[in-house]
Image 1: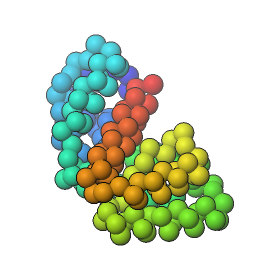
Image 2: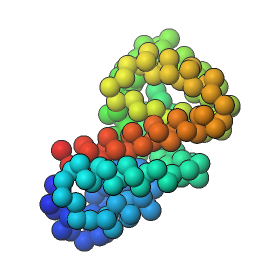
Image 3: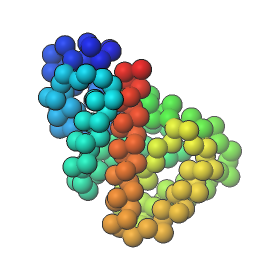
Image 4: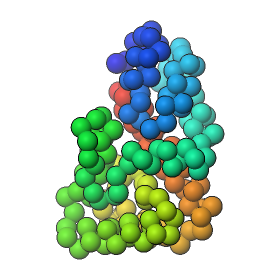
Amino acid sequence: MNLTQFNQVSAADAQHSIEHCVALPEWAAAVVDARPYASLAALLAQAESLSQTWDGVALAQALTAHPRIGERAGGSGKEAALSRSEQGQVNAADLPLAQALQAGNAAYEQRFSQVFLIRAKGRSGEQILTELQRRLQNDAQQEQHEALQQLRDITLLRLEETFR
């Protein structure tokens, strides 16, 4: 679907076309409700603005759709396919890296009671591991802030790719 079609289709069809970006239907509905968009830049600006309202509750809801970093996403939906693609560098990683990510994931989940979230696209497995280890030093408030920013980055990347 291109932007012109997105502006013209029913609200349900428009929402369906972007729901894979993040597991927050209210956000997708608000993006759709703000149509029409004059440009992709305008759509992305509105989507980013709407994402600024996300909080810990929204993060927890969105994380239900994200696999652990380094693990294959299950399911056959578009979001699972995107996660597999985005983590491509990690999925092909060597055994020591995979084991280090697994240990890091466990430590992160124990510390923060949530899945580690990072925009994996464009990052190597080693870069992701370094970032995971750094973020383990955050306090809960810092980590929520960083995880929400990662969620925004992932969502906007997916949204942009939807219209490219």
